[in-house]
Amino acid sequence: MTISLLLIAAIGTADAKKSKKTENTEETKSTETVATSNAKANIPDDANSKKFAKALLTNAFSNFSPDIEGLVYKSIQFKSDNSWTTDAAIITPDAEMECIEAGTWTLDPAESATTGTLLLKLETTDCPSREAGESIRFRATLRGTEIDAEFR
Image (cartoon, rainbow, N blue to C red):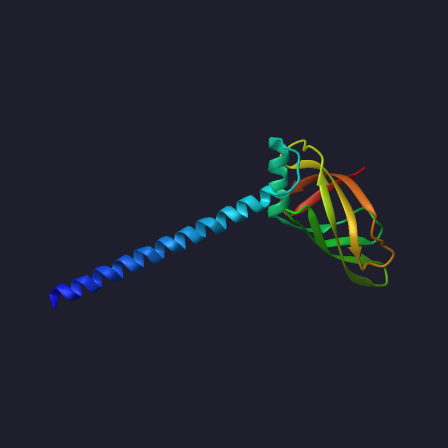
């Protein structure tokens, strides 16, 4: 009877260790996927550009104005497939109209880990007076969740 209980306890312990090992393996795979998903972005292959892109991809930016009268990107998210999406608004003295825009982004070789030149191409929009196909190019300096832009 004692041998049977010890055998059952040993099997239970082995199963628990196996289960924990499987969980750790799956957790490791998940971490690798996240890490490699950032590497999928089509960016220049230099250290500054990689650091800039990492900051670009890991932050959600807010209150960015793309230098178009009345248009404010309340939040903009850059993705590792070189796409971007934004919750935007056209703000006039009389009203604020919510809208959404999305498109693709490219990066010139970055000047530093926080400064690089971006080109945003607009692919879809429901913002009044905006059309797909428009693009903006600017020198971006990343400061936490804000983008300081010098338009080109």
